[in-house]
Amino acid sequence: MKKISSLNDLAVNGAPPAFDETQHVGRPNIGSKSEFIEYVDKIFDNRWLTNNGDLVRTLEQRIADKHHVKNCVAMCNGTIALEIAIRALGLTGEVIIPSYTFIATAHALQWQEITPVFADINPRTHCLDPDAVRKMITPRTSGIIGVHLWGHAAPVDELQQIADEYDLKLMFDAAHAFNGTYQGTKIGNFGQAEVLSFHATKFFNTFEGGAVLTNDDELAEKMRLMRNFGFTGLDNVIHPGTNGKMIEIAAAMGLVNLENVENVVEINKQHYEGYQKGLAGLAGISLYQFDENEHNNYQYIVMEVGPDCPISRDEMVDVLHAENVRARKYFWPGCHNMHPYKQLFPHAGLLLPNTLTVAERVIVLPTGTAMTEEAVETVCKIIQTRIEV
Ligand code: T4K
Image (tube, rainbow, N blue to C red; front, side, top):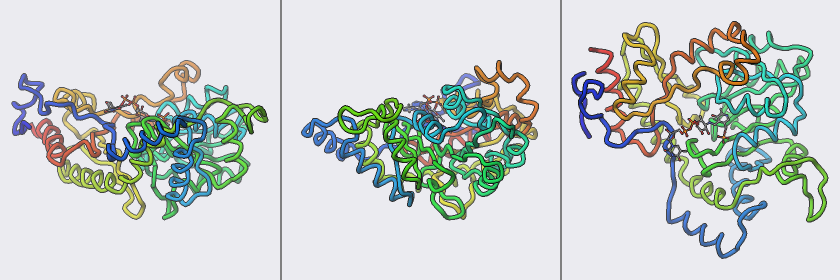
């Protein structure tokens, strides 16, 4: 790997890029290939491919146990899991969410003709600000969806208090928060339901996949019906539904990856510490702080480029891309600036000052098991070299 020692070494100045192979944000964390092949053999032998198979049920039980929650309802992806949870909870009218999230949080509502109402975030945690949530409540509000962004828990207690006060439903988009905690309790136990994503780029993946965690047995039963067209038995449909089923091959990947999650946390943490060290003291650069009293999966390395940095966030992204570091501007420019919300609510940004500031500053850097410690050092060196020119 080529070492960066001065600005002249940077690809933007005509030299070859620092990395031969692209370092992406989101390279999958993958467990044992041979164990996966064993599961594939089983699937072929059983000729059972989908529809609540053995592997899906085993995975659900293991994930529920891991999160100390009564029910895990596995789905084909996190977005469908959000849609089904939203519908099962009976959300209608308006639902308050952050704009600073992946677009799926908003689309899962809009897709069902429910209006996402964007509330501002806390600039330190990047999660919903409870005071901002209060300001957005109207007679049409039926619920709140908090997002545990970067795996950091949303302000669960304050949001629950608001929900109780106004008789609203509360659920969480926990797509980033697999195996995380809030005040020592595992994610999955808060609100009426919490939704995980097992997309390839997530801390834990099933290729594509997701799940709803809940301690409400009745709600879980409803969602199990809804993910399977409302069928009970062979010919009896007793509920409106869709096809949200997880397939056996996805569950096999999940069972293999589940064995590996502690290893992934360890590597992610090492990389996080490597970035902390490598980026310390750089003008205008700060790294998102995780609460070390909680269990974090460190899947997102979130760097902020502030006004004191000699170059802008976008210039920094260009520098990194030129070196084959596929850093990402998650979640720029905020959901409220994307279609159809930008057209529907052209003035939403006026009430979202922290969202705008954070969205303009963040760069997510690569991490995970596909990345080496030296690669982390090199990425830091690229940033350092460009700043200290
Ligand atoms: N809520 C939140 C808060 C979420 O972040 C998400 C998903 C959801 C809900 C919805 O859950 P799902 O329905 O997805 O289960 C990615 C993911 O597609 C998306 O799942 C994720 N959030 C979001 C944060 O990131 P993109 O558009 O950035 O993905 P893409 O295809 O650019 O991939 C990112 C990088 O990962 C690429 O540069 C290359 C690398 N990669 C990707 C894949 C798929 C690989 O190396 N191998 C791969 O197989 O959205």
